[in-house]
Amino acid sequence: MKALYEAQATATGGRAHGKVKSSDGVLDLELRMPKSLGGTGGAFTNPEQLFAAGYSACFDSALNHVARLQKITLKDTEVTATVGIGALEGGGFGLEVALDVRIPHEDRTVAEKLLHAAHQACPYSNATRGNIEVKLTLLD
Image (cartoon, rainbow, N blue to C red; front, side, top):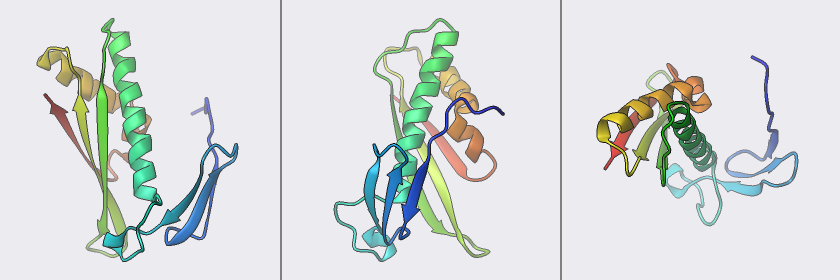
């Protein structure tokens, strides 16, 4: 693969009391462990939120891309990604993702085909396929 774009970010201090900053300075955030994982929580982000934001944005772009290829104009699409983290049976930690997708103003049969085509086209879906469970739900 030849990269069309590269993003770079550096993390220091890990997820408990860390910071993440992009090379261009646009992203400059403090990280804290969520309370549910034993951290302090508060008005800070964490890697799962950042992954959910990236995946939802990328999937929505893929959805609109595959629609354009089929000469379909979509309006007001919405993708919500829920990223879960938990302990694996064999040790370590794993992720799971649920993508809730709204494709308003479109026939359900067409919307389902677009949903599955987007899942094949999305770089995040391709990166996670076979590695983590990704549940797709087409919402009304």
